[in-house]
Amino acid sequence: MNLTFIGGTGRSGTSITRKLLGCSGDVATLEFEHRLLIDPDGPIEFLKKLESYQDPYKTDLAIHRMFDHLTSLDSSSPLVTLVDYTIKNSAFLRKRFNLSKYSGWRLSDTFENYSEAVETFKARLSLSTYNARWAGSPSFVYKNQMHYFSKNKRESFVSALREFYETLVSNLLAANSKSHFVEDSTWNICHIDGLSEVFPEARFVHIYRDPRDVISSFVQQSWMPSDVRQVVTIYGDLITDILDKASANKNCYSLKFENLVQNKNTELTSLCAFLGLEYSEEMKRFPLKNANIGRYLEDFDSATIKYLNQSLASQLERLGYDS
Image (cartoon, rainbow, N blue to C red):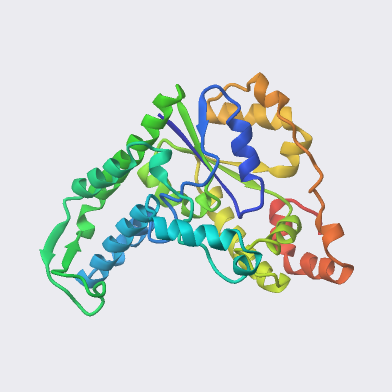
């Protein structure tokens, strides 16, 4: 099974790259981020922090959170569905209330063996389970159980997580007669070390674009501030972390969004060679538009553009853009 993880800062072209690669007859993709591996409380975070879980309280909480996370990706109820529907269909409520956590995610609709795979993953960990409680245990639980997993069993966790994910993906590939899975969770590259440890044969694609265009898009997203200065701080932290990690990983390919749009044949030929894919006729026919290249020039006034050029000078230089 071949795995490719695409990532970037967000609003940098990850979805377009996934759609392009999905044109290959060998590639299976999802139309959404499955949120399985790298989200907060997910398995990769558990792996990253395993060394710091040196007391049974912290370990118990982390284990509960990890499996609560995996369960929340495939859970719903008539009441929650009704509340979500009410919020979605009211302009007044949409502006003031969140939808339910992971609203719309039902991973068993995508991975038919999801529920069984989660239970198998938990069993493979051979957690130490015992009746006990502490001050931070979940509220009002009858006969509370605590769990423990030793940091000395790291390799066992890596093996179990690899088996869990590959079970899901291999079923998906078989059902669609594909051999290569491409996944594009936004901040995959931030977690490239953990993902590489679990999937040592995986390939990574870091796609990046002009930081000023990213900022222009960021300020319009519901998951980002609308204040440019706050966004610049977040972007600066993200891109610095991503560039450091991407440059240190031999299995990571860096792709400039503007080059992809303006020189598609050259860029995709090179990318497909790196991933072991054929550059298909469907990819060649996939339309790419450069309408959003340089959007910051229209979205921001001259004072803001000057601020961006000054604040992002080091990132612009490192990425090869003129300030």
